[in-house]
Length: 391
Image 1 (cartoon, rainbow, N blue to C red):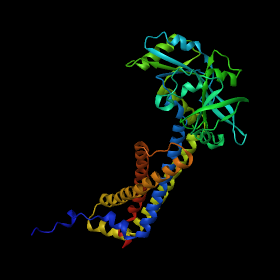
Image 2 (cartoon, rainbow, N blue to C red):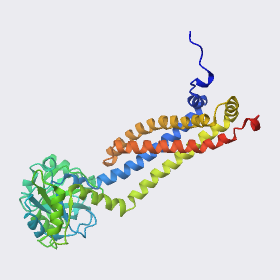
Image 3 (tube, rainbow, N blue to C red):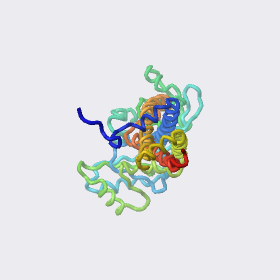
Image 4 (cartoon, helix red, strand yellow):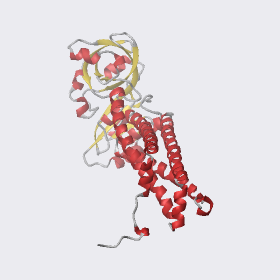
């Protein structure tokens, strides 16, 4: 039988025992950390979800490069530029196709209630490629007849029961910008943060709906490159060759352009980031109060351990481990609850709120920082654990 270990070498889970000694206090601490974590998950989720929702259509575009006017600020206010710029683009040997697109908000009249609401309208040549094949399929052929449109069945219900009527086989006619149109088919694109609904039509019909638009002007140009072409190099060549009345982005750069508008030019990013910061501060206060109370209640015990020869750094380590355990135990229910709330938000609002790994790690790091910073502040109380004064 081996001799017992010296008392200095015994491993006692002191931090864990101190936490579970008062279950009610532990439950309050975990509830506070969980609440702070949920608040951070929801605020960051709403922020990122709104940013993702702002580029719903951007992700579907069949393009390697995108041409817009340098006066364009975002997709909700697109400025025009000469269509002939796309003709000049085709001179590059790496360019295999282009699509001119008109992009504007028009007034849609609900065919049931007769109320009007803005709808994002895209006009393009039905023979050109606008969206990825999985998004549009062969529906574009339905636009060859003048006055026909494709309605996005994922638009908000305020536009009327268009999708239901179409699936029932009914003829759906209404007004857009005061002109009579007929819905020829349905597409599934999805509402974005800047547009509650979408409508596709031919450029001929678009110019009829918005007659003040110059025929030679477009708001968006899509460029497709040959397989293997260097998109960055092609974009650089085109910027040097074309006049300064156009700006050229990669598809991903166009998405970032839109997100940066909502992040920097509106209060959205600030509001939701501030909400996450408030959750962090609330969690810090709760954890600090719990750990400070725990250290204060056990100050005589800590003083006894100091008198027995335990170094102060070991006792500080006990408080640090308490903060570590609280972070782990508080994060897990916050993550699970966040997952469930994200599902509810997606079903209730249609926002693309997902629990991705990046956000999970960010909130985990914030909770760890919150708990360890609170533990660090609570450690100052151990400076009062002087055996000579306490006893």
